[in-house]
Image (cartoon, rainbow, N blue to C red):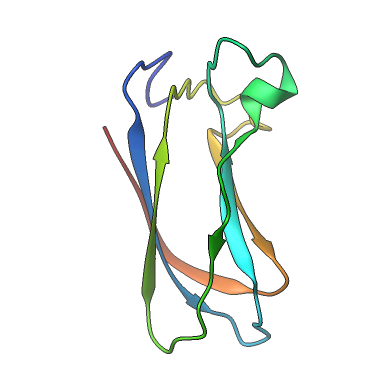
Length: 98
């Protein structure tokens, strides 16, 4: 558990590159939040706007600003998850900063 009911946003940074079978459109993050108007699974899996993936060689960086985090492991035992639309990515690192 990283933090509970944090009013300030946190920053999630993902360093990635395209996978061998890659042709992804975008990828996004769902995270455990305490947004006051969301309930149940909508709170535990709050979605952020997907980021488009450009066809570039080498490592790329995507930064997500996550408002109202609640990281209590309610997202299937985790605090967040990444998901890819239409292909593969290889993740080198994920960092979280208050």
